[in-house]
Image 1 (cartoon, rainbow, N blue to C red):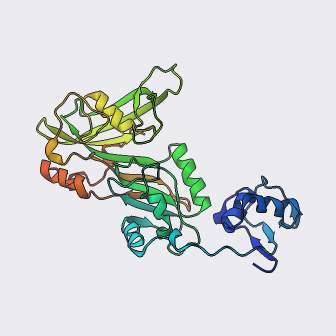
Image 2: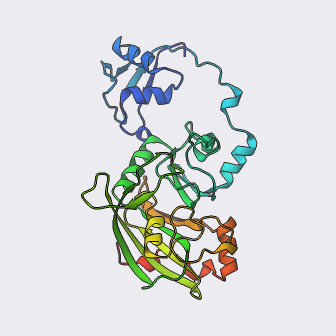
Image 3: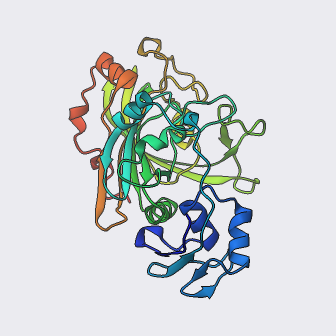
Length: 331
């Protein structure tokens, strides 16, 4: 950019720190360059000097001085057309604020030491008509399929993060478990903590804890049996009241009805070897306040291995058209 510009802070920008707003808008600038521009008064807000930590508000104007051009973007930093088509095929809801994916089993949400292909690396394919790629506002385990929510701009990200943090979201999971739980409807409560050992997400496990133990958190899960395959297996709806790591998997195993295909959380009942061996847990539906007002409700269809398991056991997903019904009046 070779001339001075004045940019108005939009509603979609939210109320970010000045330095973060500049880094988002001009990602080729380093933090050091941003701080120098602010320290020397070249960047001003409503005509006044500001510090990096000051916050902007919608409607304010920011003076942007001439900036160095961005370095050419390496071809390897983008994603292929094949990857773009793939990640867009997962979209089950899109508006100006929110994208919801039906995440498949086996695809990680974020990367790690041994994880190169993941949703976060494919986000460029979900820009559509926006300038910036969307941002994750919650997570699913690699082996859990279903509803995954993304925010399309900072204001939506802040709104949705608060909704998840304050438990204003309502999430329903479907699982196939070994055996058939009794009673058929109930609530599971326990104090849990992360087991000591490596912090690698693939090896992380939760264990029962005393309330007074360091790192202990309270986990609450509501469940309802929808259908049964004799006493061999059951289709169960799960509603996490709290959002603890692995809490659904931990609770069902502790109850004696582990989720079929779970490699970590097991119980003494026979495994269901004829169902493919993969985790049978699906984030079926989510209901939450929308950043622009009203309510957003999205349902993710069964697919792949979990749909095949339903067919094998004779379960019909149309028998539970409203995923939230088993939990009406429990919030």
